[in-house]
Image (cartoon, rainbow, N blue to C red; front, side, top):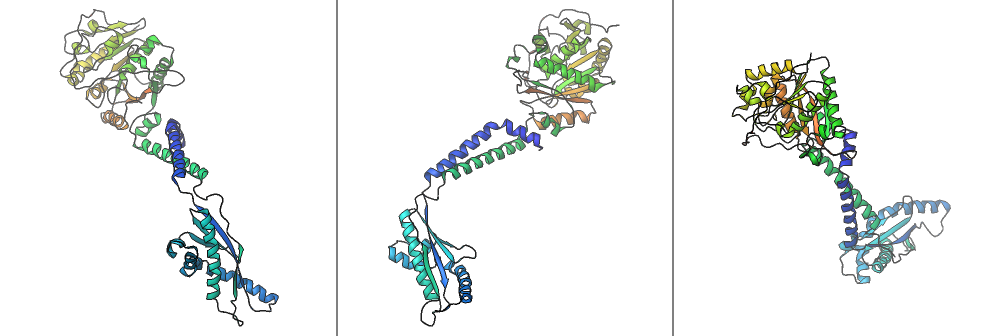
Length: 472
């Protein structure tokens, strides 16, 4: 995951980061509230070594060095039973030497004759008394351990340099530290959750997700609008809006991608239903017709046709009727709008859509349309539920795969592209739909029904109009 994707992920999950920080901070505050305050008292002892009654400067220096060496050996003595048991008896503590040793610690600065004895506990007055008692007990034990001098005195003298005093504030819990630590831990867990969710997320959310699936160009990116159901043809109702600009960008990208190659018939499909392919097909056809071209939009979805409904046209007869010989193309192709757009509805739903779309009649029909129109847009069924789109791709110049940022899945897109590549269909690229609104614009795409259920055929009379012919 590169830096830009990571930043986008963190920006999109800002609410989770905020929640993690708040929960972590609350946890730090709660930990502080339930923790029992712990106090610490420290007494400082000075250790001196005597070499005799009359000491020269050399002997004093030797004594200091010896004291520094001995101090290190006295550190473990502090928590020994001979030191702590007298303290327990003197203060009347209901504890064992082992349990008291867990609250007692000793340290000595490097190159120093000082020995700091610290005691922790929940009673501030008690820890001060224990620390001072331990200091006194250490001196007695050390005198007993060291070999006495000729006069019978101990060569090591332990003196209390600074007695312990009752601590005014606890050393634990630390509210500010717990708050900061809890906040940082909450943020860290939130960041980890975001990246784990990203790795486990199979949805198509942005162009980077498409790039991770296939090496195909992104031809367009179109958003979502709650007003879709009433106004799916945004190229008609709001041609200069953000959606209209997005479709014109798509039209331009297709033209540039085609270059000098023959690109007369464009099939629009998707991996699964409900990804916005029908709305994309319809608006793309309008945009192409607006560029002063004779355009034919064919509803080749013979299972769940929607083009006639979207354009408000009669759909009782159409493509399926032409393919089985019940109608002539000129009888079912209907003009729409003031530009050069004509629409061929799907017609009656046949029992064998794949066979009809792959028949020789379909190939001949597409050749006939190719002589009559500049551009042909084919609204094909999704690739994965049925094989219709794969069959149609053989009579089309190129295929556009629509993927929804709302419902599209990486595995589905990969499988759909693989299906087209296996039959050597030319894939022009991917169009992202249902992207979140940006810059105040709202966008929308349609809902696609199931592909294996039954759907009622459209009924009604069909106006007889002659099929348009290519301009001279």
